[in-house]
Length: 106
Ligand code: FES
Image (tube, rainbow, N blue to C red; front, top):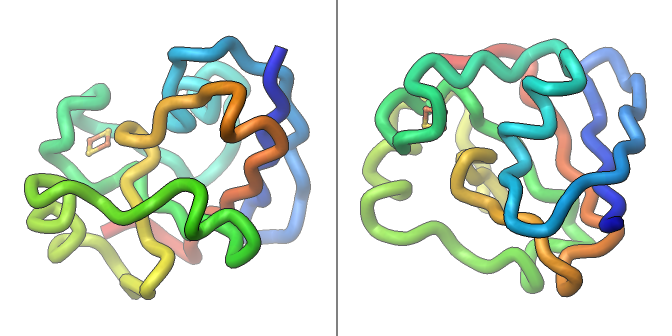
């Protein structure tokens, strides 16, 4: 099992054991983490699954692909570490990943 921590906007830490191959968004929804809406169900077409990757993990997670980057234009308060959580797939390399939920979605 791989560890994933999703920090809600109010500071609550949701520490999850997740399966490799699942996305950060899927795990947020499955565990009812507040602030992740994921209206399009993971198709990279809504930008309501926006998260900030923790600074310590930014390089490991990497930059968004072109399509995700375009969708991020619709997200609220985009920062250098912004990603769409449906596009971050968990793997052993991301064991311990921490992401933060923004104040609100688009
Ligand atoms: S769930 Fe719609 S872009 Fe991620």
